[in-house]
Image (spheres, rainbow, N blue to C red):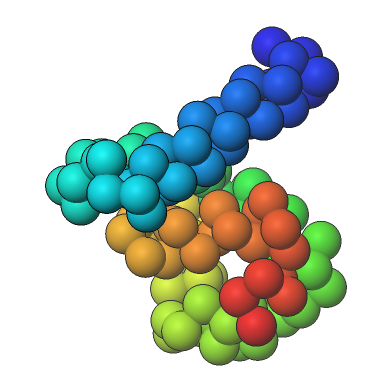
Length: 108
């Protein structure tokens, strides 16, 4: 899929979400339905390979201990992720995806 098409789809989805929020504000959509709309627009969390995690940390020009501090994990966790001994999951994986897409300053 091309970047131009993704941006167009993202723009359409943003418009749909904005419309739903307006309808919720006007009392035409209940809270439960609005939560469903909100859930549809969460950014996907993609698994990262060990080499991707290392490249991400190196792109941000930080050491393993500093990277671990930003992610609120132990340095050993980052080391094991980069060696492929363990895989990040849950909040750690979400934060890694945020750093991948928006840079380390997004979680600073």
